[in-house]
Amino acid sequence: MPRTPVPTSRRAVLRQLGALPAAAVATALPRFAHAAEFSLKYGNNLPVTHPLNVRAQEAADRIAKDSKGRVEIKIFPNNQLGGDTDMLAQVRSGGIDFFTPSALVIATLVPVAAINATGFAFSDYSQVWGAMDGKVGAHVRAAIGKMRLHAFEKMWDNGFRQMTSSKGPINTAKDMDGLKIRVPVSPLSVSMFKGLGASPASLQFSEVYSALQTKIVDAQENPLPIIQVAKLFEVQKNCSLSNHIWDGFWFIANGRMWESLPADLKTVVSGAINDAGLKQREDIKKLNETLQADLAAKGLAFNKANPDSFRAKLREAGFYAEWKGRFGDEAWGLLEQSVGKLA
Ligand code: X2X
Image 1: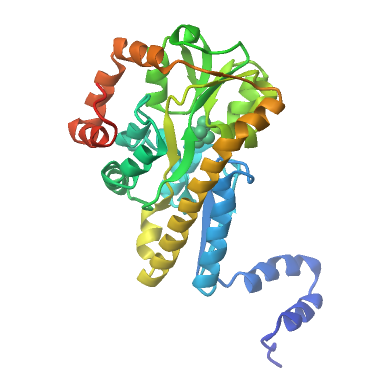
Image 2 (image 1 turned 135 degrees about the vertical axis):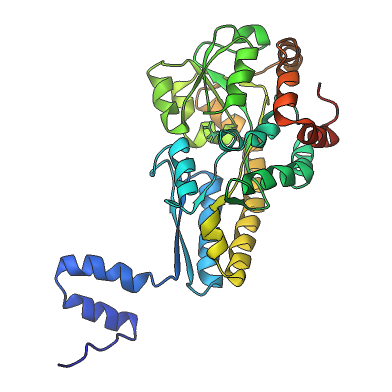
């Protein structure tokens, strides 16, 4: 029997495929096209237009090139593989290899990871990156590591969270009274918004647009880039600039998969992901400077919320004392080294 010749060029591959029935082509093609030794899946909760996806795709391209095709990363954006809770379970089990949960969301598994989201802790980005590229971040990464997940060194930016509502502007903590507001699946968010007198509902991000549209909730809170790319301005009237939480994404990998990667490939993957994260931070910073005008032109009415009334209300509700206890003195002390005394 004559042996099937091994195709040597793209042309030869196509010629050979041309001789196969369509169904066979569909299954044969990926095998030729994806000879990667490590074919890895990355799931996230954001639309493809968000800088997180744009920069992650660049990282994936660089990894394919620098690993000479040995590592291929396929991105599944926009909750294609399930919502936040589902993807967190999948990255633990190995169903997916990478996930970028917000600090708020991974905190359902690693409680101290929510520490950066302590209400009104950070006043600017120099404090944020000082803490997260420094001791606070290192403390959280170690805690993530104990759950058999690998967290890359450079956290990616979500941004300072702002409140939007279909019920009018939020100026002071009083305007929060009884407000039905969606928050992420996160114990800290629930505690904080209860402390502010609101009525928070935890929903995965995949459900936010429709929950606002159908008025299951009246309000939500997210950084401006998310309000833009997820088109939340279509279903909200007001945006109150509150900067109440700084939130970032941990780029995490399944621990077993990570350990199985040879050292040279670990270097390639880490380098590309961390560099892309730094570029993504710049993208978010630029968007924050331009998006208010953009969103205002789309009909969102902006106002500045008064942070003092919120801080006072949270203190009164015992929010800081409670979370200092839950995070522990060590973590709280590291945060205060970056931002000053909190409570
Ligand atoms: O769910 C949200 O609000 C988002 C997109 O900011 C997070 O991933 C926490």
